[in-house]
Length: 126
Image 1 (tube, rainbow, N blue to C red):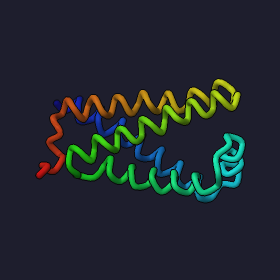
Image 2 (image 1 turned 180 degrees about the vertical axis):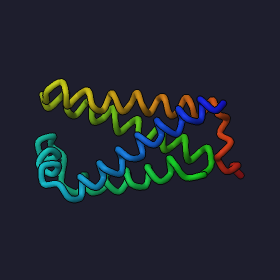
Image 3 (image 1 turned 30 degrees about the vertical axis):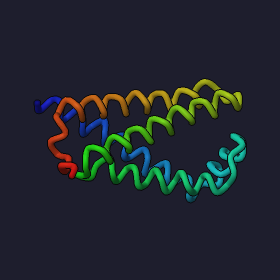
Image 4 (image 1 turned 45 degrees about the horizontal axis):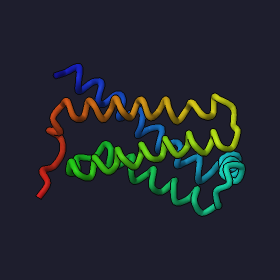
């Protein structure tokens, strides 16, 4: 059980940290703004996605209901798959395409460990 918790928190911490860092870059880095333009997204989408990533990172580590955790995992999975598709369609290098898939794999590890530990840290749903 201890190994499951360690693996869960390591994977979850990596995802949460990456999402917070990513959101920060979305708000502050001009190169990221140019990247969104390159992918064909409007400027406001970068801000929306940054806010969503911050909220999701908080929900991923907070003791919230299992239903909210499930939606958080689903949202991040959609984000990573969408990023892979956007980079692929835009003709970006393989390295740009693989990043989202690597983080999707880490997210899957976090989710599987979350399920294995029995959601004991989640608040019971009403």
